[in-house]
Image 1 (tube, rainbow, N blue to C red):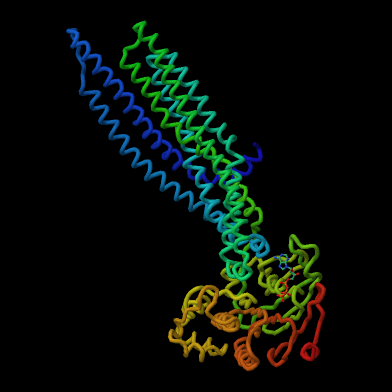
Image 2: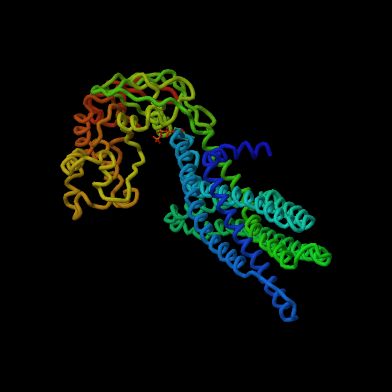
Length: 573
Ligand SMILES: Nc1ncnc2c1ncn2[C@@H]1O[C@H](COP(=O)(O)OP(=O)(O)OP(=O)(O)O)[C@@H](O)[C@H]1O
């Protein structure tokens, strides 16, 4: 219980910030329900009173009934119910959307503070689940788990209090029975469905992951003829999820049956107990009818509670998963790098790095300095740790030991906008969006005009090819650049990089996938563009030292350490 409170607390606090919305929203729901109950009760009273007056007149007895006041009351409650329902829906939906924005703001805030290691540890489908399903599940808290039970309690109080004015014993019995029913369909049902609804969130997450994987890997699955095997795995999970969902549906149906049975029995009980009071002449017949019908109307107040509380486990599961995000998000002081025209100095001091789930450190005791405006190359076999070193330089991850400083500041503490302005990183994996060439290039510089785009394309030797395309700059590149060759996609990524004006440039295998002639052309363009910037090339090995002009520093990564090399030595290797 303590753990439950601890896990839910941050999200309840977010809801608490909107307590005024909660009170007004609950009040509107309460007015709607009371208007409905009053309409039912008064109508029952009116019909019973009319019937009795009619019977009395038929028997020749004098009888009088004011039909205008109750008739007016019925119209008033009917109108009030409609207006209150409309206002309640409008207000509460607005509140839910406001809360949704609050929750998303909080989760996005946590996401932006996650480093690359934390982001990579989860799959894209898991992030999708957290940003959509989990937030939506938590969003249920307000409209399903907080407002209805609160309003239910208020209704119990008002209805039993109202009945108690004429029938105190019946009022007390009604309060007792309805309070017990309230406990069963709220706390009891939260406990009863907890495991199933908790499981449901995980099932949905797992299914989403499996289906997304199937879509993404459909080409491979088809080429290996393993579609049926994979489909069977999805089916297996689906069956498990369906069986759990069926259990939840059964429990929900049982809940509705309990509500119908208890309110039904209470109606009979009130009628039975009331008949003694009526026989004793302590209450008028229409009043008893009104009490009975008001109790019958309580069915509407309780009917949504079992299904809502069955999902309490899902809300808790969602809260727990989102709490994991907050725990991983690091609070850091955000810094800005000064503007400079001569690059920034990059300093690594005794840096070690260990991925959380890895058996050993990828990098250990790395120390080097690249002075501002100078160029360096770091080589290493596949898996030596070059991309990890680049990520440390970019501040995407923080060292386990030692320090990284760019112009004296830890790069992981830089404001994201500042980092985007001062750093440029050509990664091995190129990300192009499904759009035109121009759109993809303008990601780096939205204000770039067509001349600048052509200039960037010519620097990477792609302008001739683009001019031969019917769409020119509006040529579609396809999802992830699939309509381009691997080498062309990398060159578009490089052209995009060259539309920026960064102080520190990291180039991971900039010449991969291009022929010797194009590589020479790109190297010349890069040489002039890199003037005044601090540059680190990351390559497996230097096959042609002429591709790396003005490189002053050469290091080789081996077994986690950094060894000083000479460019001639590497070039001859
Ligand atoms: N997110 C991660 N979690 C755990 N281990 C990782 C992670 N990323 C990389 N590694 C491990 O760290 C080591 C270095 O990886 P890294 O990608 O830095 O090498 P690299 O030199 O860039 O290789 P390549 O040239 O093939 O790209 C590898 O053994 C890899 O398995």
